[in-house]
Length: 249
Image (tube, rainbow, N blue to C red; front, side, top):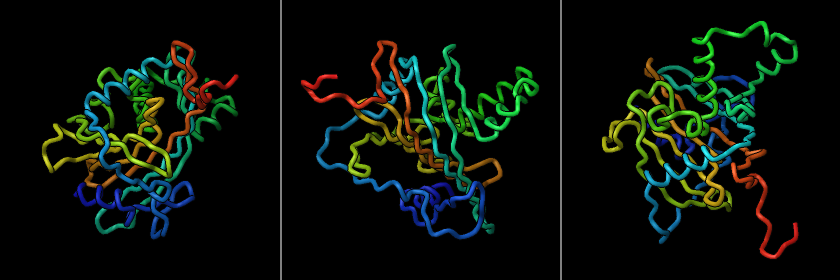
């Protein structure tokens, strides 16, 4: 049941990830090993729906964007050893405003010159686009007209923001936004994702969650996002730390 997998995700008790690109069996390292969340107390309430809309506006105001993403994924089925995968991708918004995700496989194709030979049909391009957004869920906010409905493939009922709170992650203050599939009211939901947002830049730094796949498997995924170059349409560089007051740049 997805709630059991969510409990594992939040505690890090059973959700583990190996260092190899794909492996199965036991591994003592939790996928949440980098993430120690301390919930805040006596902090101002944040409306989850309004905050989600605010983050969407931020991503749609970006003109230059590059990042790197570490993807850690665990597929768990009853009676079978969990399958763990890890990969790195690079994401960018092109000069034409399109999404470009570079995977290890694409790096090989580009280096060999096969990219020009493997151009697909419009249907194939749409499949690639959906796969790119699967690997870069944070950019769904930029490239989908209705990001809550299309946040994750396989969740036809879409998502509802149900909670937003200020938390501390490794001494850094972030806003944790919880998305649940469906209307957010039922306790029997098929997917839940947490989105960790930098409150100063409104950039998404981490996405982690779990969903039930069509074959009944629980898919647990953790995305660690490192922005490299982020510039708004007004020319504000969000990836560069703000200078202290009075400092000369």
